[in-house]
Image 1 (tube, one colour):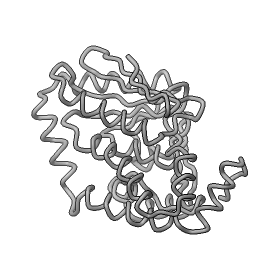
Image 2: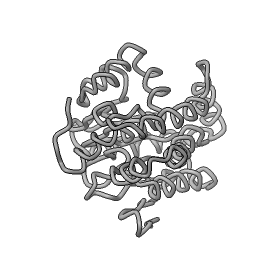
Image 3: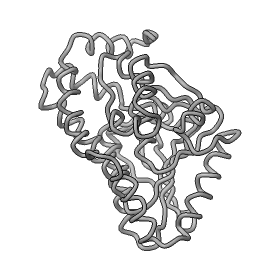
Length: 267
């Protein structure tokens, strides 16, 4: 089943593998970059899975060898060009609804990551409960190269997994890391040989979790997610305000102009 938005040039493909619902971001021509419309659709599908008593877990993947290249550049360029902080905040809140849906879902969510997981795609994976990566997976907090701050909850989620110093290194230096280093840092649960194996292991993990008490899994997830001070929701609101502020800068305009021209990003 496809849940598509013709204006978004992509779809969310939905399929059930027994009690596991597989949600696939299907926009391969853009390495599965998320438009606001696709983010809305994906969030709706996460929420629908949570309401379905036949579903016990969610697996999130990207089509044709890549997980997600982050937010769609054209959507961000349009907001930058509009020069409206209110428009930027509205854009961020659309993406934030997706992050919140993953984080607060009663169901465990397993990300199957291959190829690029850049920017918001990296942080989308962090909002899931487990990450299974293929050996070719590449993670990068690319935001500062484009004159932006980390978004989709990254500044809240990343330090929880790797610690403050490593999170600062990844976000401030914008260094790409591979699957093996991500595993060593504690970002991913396991590394497989290829994308097919990563998806198979993610589906297996989902089936294992779906076989357990749904209430116990839900409450365990909630306890772990609330184990540190502060909330994701408050971090998301601060992020929206901060991102809106930097979207109005010349650095952001220049960064995305170069990106859309295909100019290599500055490390």
